[in-house]
Length: 567
Ligand code: HEM
Image (cartoon, rainbow, N blue to C red; front, side):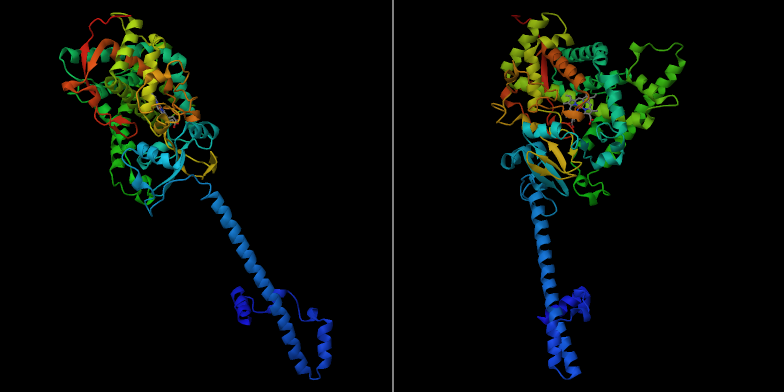
């Protein structure tokens, strides 16, 4: 036992027992000790005996203290451990077992929204996944989505951004990636809403959208005359691009003629592809310095060329304005004019760098999303001839013969609106929304989501959740008829535009553009699949990127409409 005490003394660095007890020889004298002293005649013996007795007492006390110390350590250790495990393992969302280093990356395929949806069937609507070093929670039910997008919107509205974005510093300037607490984010959202998406601006740009959609119909007419199939993906992309480029700059930047390549178009697609590609550096920070997949080089090249194009348009406008004798009237001003105003004067609100990044956001977020939705809707209708007939009959009955679809007609087309909602349910452009990040620890449906976790809302899985939707994988627009369910961020079973403070600001434009393009294509032509492909054989494979694309672009043959019988 003494060796244990010695060891304790040694290990504490305290070699003098008094240092442990805090008591001196004098102060430890007691009646018992004096009796012992009387019995001993030899003072040396007495001193020795006193020392031994003293040492025994001190050893006993030290031993007691030693045990107290060990016990306290043990108690502290077990308490901390049990707290940690109740905060961590017990309350963390469940998820699949992890492998060293890669975590769960081996379980995630080319279409992560599908892999996650499959795993959520086993692990539930709030699921933990580890992607390399990145802790991620995936949400897969309307209730859990409400928690993220409404209840804890503030804590969860920061973003996780990719290395590709970081390489062009886009995360420091972009409305889509800045933190909502940043004054710049608030300013950019305000500018977008005021100058682009307010009801007045949407109304003011209505004629422009009609004109661009009419150009699409003219192009399809030419294909129809030549009995050629139309690449719906490309044609609707060019239309969406020209709508945005005219709202922003009053110029066409897209070109229907596939023989004349459009640089601008290629650059927008290039940025989107490289940002959307899986990049290992996002999951393994030590790979940040290597650009193994070349994403950063591509995003840098394309965005630098785009920035130069924006700068050219900006400078030309300033030169043009200075040559104009009279000031433009407000109604003829476009977004570029508004940006120039914001950039000028002593109290300029935006600098040219911030303007370039904003324009990059608007082009990348506002083109492919619209066009891929139109493409998916056409693909679903070609696969479901009954729905195609029903929607065409509805449009004919409202527009009549030889008319033109107007935006104002859309409110009278409930089945067309149901077709669009059903397309958003089955094919949301951003199946995982944009990645969010927990600013602090937060509880979602009773599970702890620790600070810094990436949070993904799998709206693709929510849209196909069998406990919410009957026949979830079937295209049945009828399910929306007579229901109030909408895409505007209040119904958490259908949030293709997100919800809360990060909801897509372009929603008011998209809900005008998509139905108008679709109704016009359906009203002006009948459609069939090329080379005798039967409707049941149409492939509906999807490719995940920044937006969810049809892997193989839809080609369809437009047939001039014979006068349909109008009921
Ligand atoms: C079918 C069309 C569209 C769909 C499905 C769509 C969807 C989305 C989604 C899911 C988000 C992320 C929301 C979140 O994180 O919770 C988003 C953000 C955004 N969208 Fe859209 N969008 C569409 C059209 C547009 C258009 C036409 C524009 C502009 C011209 C636009 C501009 C933006 C911007 C700037 C953001 C970032 C907002 C922020 O993070 O604060 N979008 N969009």
